[in-house]
Length: 244
Image (cartoon, rainbow, N blue to C red; front, side, top):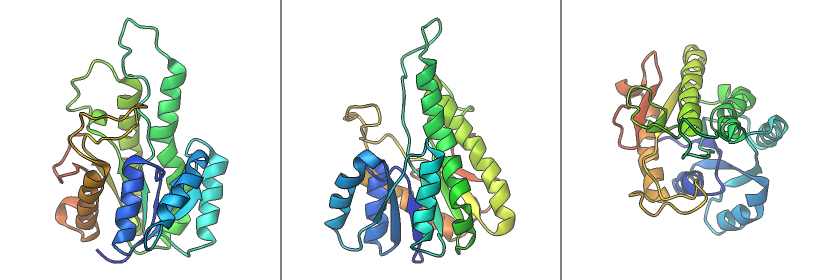
């Protein structure tokens, strides 16, 4: 994988933090977008390693925060090779009709999971166009696959990830004529605290998921045929295609 300059969202914990560490460990330049409440902790954690990621305050639900993050990064680099959207929430998963849905929670889940990556892609687009790879990697989920849906709940999460998949297709259509692409990935079931508590049943650690994601990122950057089509590739952490 060539040396990259990357921006990673959700880098204050979980998969995003593991990806930022893994990319930096490989010698890449990483800007790590973290929530303001996570900034001090993230700066301390990253400062303890070689080639530390540069921490950038970021709330993907706040357009002014996203614009400020883009301006901050633009003040330190002329371009980005990749924008990696990891920031996400699960929201309330138990409600199924007939139920008293918490629609405010559904709105928030959409705001983070679907609109957040779009805000970031839009604000960072000029930096991305100046780069060499012009790649957007959106961390989605098998839960966003309409073709394989078996759940009867998780409405906010599943619907928001399906919306992210459509946003990814639209962004791919925009980027492809400009020499770029979008990669959509299901990172596996990972031991994170997205639901508020550590998901101890999950088989993958954040570090294992991050390494697997980077392997697929490398394939996309190498322009392997599976990652160069008219449509964005939607694969899991092992590189297996996920039905849309």
